[in-house]
Amino acid sequence: MVDDNIDPRIDQWYWEPKSDRTFTVIDYDDDEGVIEIQYFDGDVNELDMDEWQELAPEETEQPEDWTGPIDKLERDDLGYDEV
Image 1 (tube, rainbow, N blue to C red):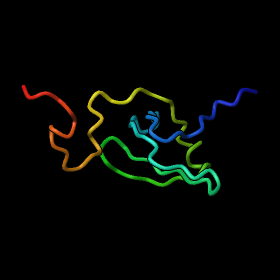
Image 2: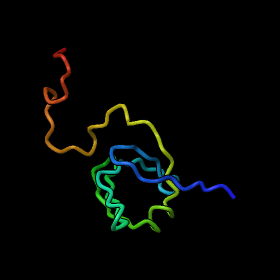
Image 3: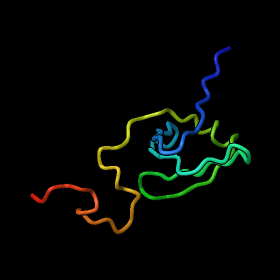
Image 4: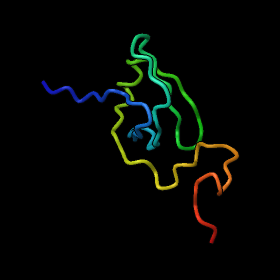
């Protein structure tokens, strides 16, 4: 039997097939088995390992505009040149 479970990694982006949403892991306490995630739209959720496995997350690339969940970010904060 192959174990398809993916371990959570901080700053890794994942796709949740059931909701078709992307999120990143912002904190993971292996000792407590608690994972804190933030969806691209800014919603934050805390999961235990059973809930994590129920999500059946798949690793994905960081969104091109990864600033979605960040509040009050100015263009200068990104290091972009003025156009």
